[in-house]
Image (cartoon, rainbow, N blue to C red):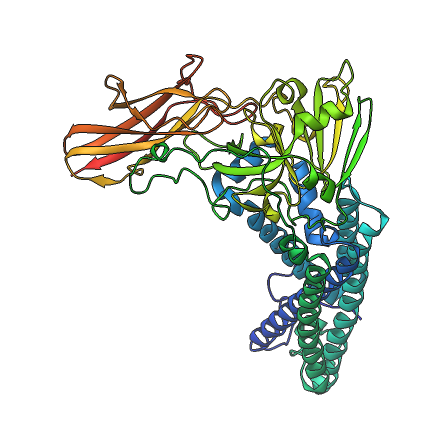
Length: 556
């Protein structure tokens, strides 16, 4: 039996003696077969995804087909495109990526359904191909084991089988419709595309089967996701953590560290508002009772410590402004928190660092590797294995149960979330994740500043306008901030109280005599070494953005 070619865009030419009135009927038949084929493909894809979610509930959420493909896509995406995604979508970059994957899968499913109307196994081959891609993507993860391939393989097999079955039902319904068409319907020169749309009991059975497939897939997919969430839920274990008091408590930041200007960032960033930039499509959920930290490599005494042992070490508080290298000039990806944790330098000295070591590599539960210059950890600065943030146990999104923090370095070179492994090594011996992709291996934070008040394109009254913002040069500190209007002379801003070199410093400036019209405000900072924030604009890649932040306002 031959079916309708999916590439057909117009009704076939009328045969001699056929009435012109047949053309609308044949067009309706073709449209109905096309719509039915698309619906069958989408229903099969829904079933495939549901089976993938159910299987991933047993093998791990990261092995689900869409998650595995998305994670591999992140690893393979060129740096420029990653920067564009962060700049354009911000912390919504991951939902956008997953949405794109699901839309692509939907398009392939429609194509598979259209192919299956004519050649069922051709449509099934698309499902098998996507299953192969999913299995490869899952196995490409550094933390994967062979079971990671199972969700994609199961999804492909079930999706292909459902597609073949539903497509066969469509073809039987179409054949029945032709047979019911009477002698004219069986004209020798008439092909399948000219048949009336499938109807009757056979058509109803196909529609019911397709609808049932979608309904079952929705229930199974939601059930699989719920089962996966339940199996990985560590909220109770996290809430049960009892944080001991700090052996080395930090003094409260001075009240004068935060100017009383409406709309200015709070000095301490709440956990809910703290930025998150990472590559994890699913958050690692680690039971603290099963967590351990391995310290090895170029050390005299390798260590393996449990979470309880970590909490029994002397804990220190540290106020610290953490920033992301992906931050554009004036961008939002930084925040200040009070962290609590064990001393990282003390742990390394306990292990005994060997001569020749110059890099500390932190490994995350999800396989991410972060390389930190060892001399930055051991030069006397306060660096932590953090277990708490702003007075509460570390949130899962920010690395629970443990993350590293080394002031003066961007997060990509110092702040391993979901930390499970520390290897003392050398830069010559190993390139961590971001260095392999061309980023600077040192990760030193650049001197930067931004205008927060007034906001860009704000309308402000003439006269005196309060300008305010934040500057940072972590582990060096800020000594001056200057503001200028319309490229005029620089004027020194008033600095808020200095809370320490590892923290941002807020500032204000009274712009007097502001006249009606559009005006451009610019800011630059100077760190305590005397280095002025560079004017030349540079993108975040490979070592952090540079340039003076400016904002345009309208005085009315």
